[in-house]
Length: 156
Image: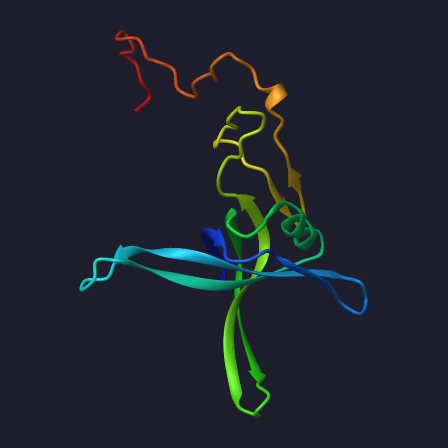
């Protein structure tokens, strides 16, 4: 079975970092995601507010580097929870259990824009960071090469 979800939006509040009794970090946050289509009657786009839960190093990463208004790309799995409210009513809620979080926009440092093509992320398995000082001023080589007109013996 496949259960994978990827969303991109802005955090509606600062992530809330807590620790379980066994001192495992857990962060909860909500991401506001605009729908791709506008309402037929009003012409306005609707927004979904999606609850997210990150664990361990991912939770600490989100808590340290993201805040209210930050653009985030979140990938993980959708989980449905059944619970009982204070009045004894049965409730159901959906949330994303986060596997990876990526920066959704560049951030300026000392007036210099960072490249959008390299984003920092943290997952429970790896940490990818990008340092602007390591960037070469030469353009990246192309993955494609131009063929000569004389290539008459192509294998296809």
